[in-house]
Image (cartoon, rainbow, N blue to C red):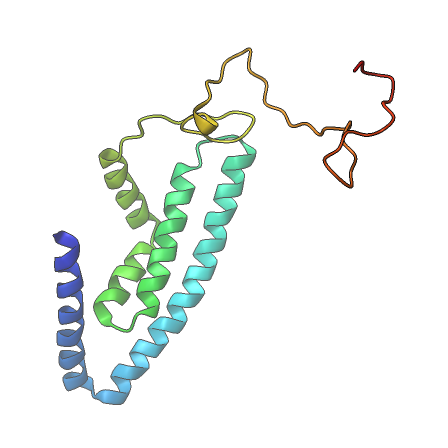
Length: 167
């Protein structure tokens, strides 16, 4: 329900702000401000995004939890989308999300409301459950094989066994 209200309220707020600002300073200065904020926002998103990627790489190299750098990167991406959207309200929210203290406060707020039930790291990467429903334990070894006793041109067994196996 709140998402519907946001999709309804944000355009109405933007239209009201365009009318107010356009009436106060005129059409061309209003359009100039919209274009300049998009250009400045793009530059800021690039620099902030590069810093977020550096922090993410650093957390990976030190084997730290990458949750916060990933969240900051997602907020920077969202800020970029807001800054490219024409409007004063979306620009204000986008510029606010580019400030590290605001991102940190938003991360802290969201972190309190998200609960991770289960997360495992292993040699195959993160998994929430074993593949194909097979149990994994200390006596299970994943592997791949290739049948060398088959003729490569067909599914028939090769004519001359190598002597390594008995038939």
